[in-house]
Image (cartoon, rainbow, N blue to C red):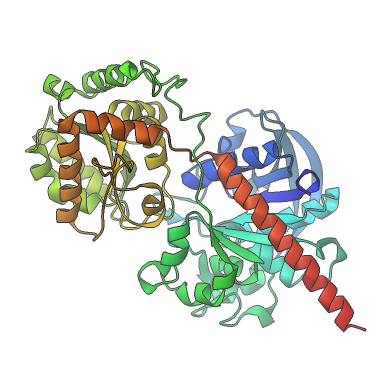
Length: 500
């Protein structure tokens, strides 16, 4: 069945075309893995200005796709390009909606017309597939920006034969982003008024595009098994826990994968010396180079160097880090931080780095090559997130022999096992309560093992042997696609039989 399966893969960002975060990494990597298993997977996303600026070769294949938007019908152009693997990528072009400096908003906040922008994309993606005759088996939608797709299929296109055998899968990457808009704008997105109720698209008087995906999709996934459990609780569900509990039988957690074609110390072009488990001398050379590049004291060549690559926000545990920083520096460890985010954390960390010059270095901004050099050169990676749907940096760190110290939440809890030096099992260190003291205690445990020498080498080797490749995740998604299609067909048969 895999060879014949057709998957329409929709996301608001896809690496390498457009990216603001981990969603783009998933939307770039998973289709490649599915394509490797013979799936006819095609990817759709808006044609942003940032894509145009890359001068990607694309061919216009549709010039006047008519897309309803409120009382209007707007023409849409569709460009086609391909990935290096030959996956077809369709770019939905509408200058007034997508030709902007940023994907979702600017420093002042979200764009005021994001409902219009992503309603247009969702409706256009459905109509385009019908226009070119791409009768997909599964439409796989990601986050709130694509949440209207399952809602359209279950409402206004409910009786359209073209979609009668289509199954929809909706993936939550972060339930904190819910796509909330005023209920008065229901007509704008084209969902019938009878769907505006607590069991439908309505959310406390508003429209929630995330909730649309949760309610109307045939199956829901999250990006780790633990996160799928967490979001059914008030602590992590952020108001959506009731909706998710109702659909618990249709909720699955599939751990994201790591793209080892990009994150592999044996062939990483961004690091000074390649290495692999059998030849670890390169790890030391990368550490020395990182110390020199970031201006740390030479003494850290024999002392632990800690790295953190993160969005600088409370969700990522920056408040915990700031609270323990003075004590951390007293432990004779070096600290390198790369990231951007909330201004207060950017300012605090820069100030602290000046106070602890030589022991701590901070770079504000996004610098992918430097991220690779930190992962390769640090001894430990800190990921103290308040919550973390999946997390990828800890997976990258393991492959590079860099030991993660993480909070036991979401995908961090699923991927990191506390190291036991007696049994030689485990790949990192974890702490439970979201508090500064347990975080510091976990770092102290890591430092103790580092000083012990041989157990640390075993710990590094354990991490480097882990396999979090996308092939594993893709197999799970294929099984899921097949199960939801089987359920869809059986349900259709029962409906057909009951009609006679």
